[in-house]
Length: 527
Image (cartoon, rainbow, N blue to C red; front, top):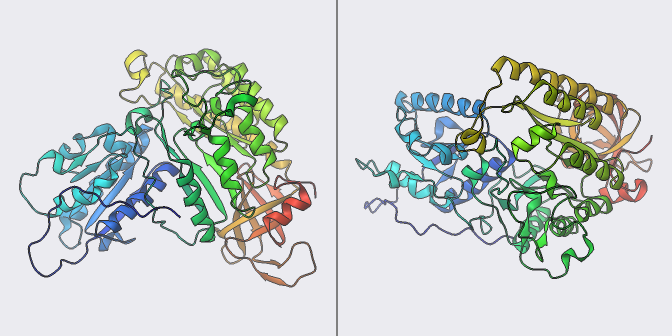
């Protein structure tokens, strides 16, 4: 298990009244990626340790914190709208709400602007300063006039903060799935990306602390662990002499490079970590996000291929299918190197499902470059994708050195074509699933038909709707039927397929180990 969280050693305002003040309640909203969700769980732990109570009801909260994303302009606009709504609630006078705080990437990017703009925020705290949240809230609640900026804001970046000693307080402790942060920050400096400026430099958690946290989650009944990081597969910790002896391509996948020199020679790398977490229990599936394609050397692909409970789903963000556009993006690879990598992954990991990210309308993108992206989508036939049109971010290489010269209507038209091309490929890939069986981890009742259907995910990360809430207690015997429960592994045969969802019949509950032994893994097999 993880060590108990450290108590911040900074000074706080405290009442001089002999009667202890009631514990104040904090409500937190989270925007953005899974990393932000995990950060919220870290903040929840630090708040409890700092003398605060947590609430899921905004109307009961004395303080509301908004954990933000700054990767795209649209995400920031949603946060600005929400802050104005929270300010109106604070002024209402009939609510408990007194303090509004902004956490995360937007806090780091905009800093004091959040305090100055219409008084929308009382507290601002960046991703590396969460230990200071209780102090900042104490200060805001003190009603002391003319607080200095340092009493309301901490956006200092760190070279070593990983919150390795903090055991996150999960919002849904009964969920069969959990996230575990293994590294923070990013050194890639892609031209379009603000993450290195809002999340700081790469740093990895100690290897043993990650494994201990995962062991604790398994003991609590978690069935699926997703390892998290801004560049998760660049994880590197400590020294392990001789690690690279069997890897002829060095720290990166063949044909890939980076603007920084890797510091992974002799380190415990991501392949070691994935293998160690998977070894905790054969009943726990292991995923990871968000990776960079350069950090898929063959040793990592081998671990994924040879370990049954490591999910056979790889997220390989391409961003563009054009070598010239990729060069402007500073991605460190060509179209040809990327295609070679996904071909090698498919050869080494039979049945692997691929997902990707794409940006339409990046600086200088031509119609020919856009067509290269469409042709990559047709060739790769991704099963999931995250697709956006480009929005310029301050501080990035593109903002300083390139021109955002693709008209907005052209960006939107190209994005629509990217989405249409992706969906056609995904639908074609999913139609091939009909008649196959999958090992599905059940998450809960279906949202559309909770009385008759259950919902879960396959090993390949696809949403699966189970037609029926009862099935055999044992998929491989003539056992009685039972109610399907969240956290059950269910063998399911696919009957229908859309572009993003599979419809399947439950054949029975099983253990992951039993399924692996019978089918050679959790990848879809023939009916």
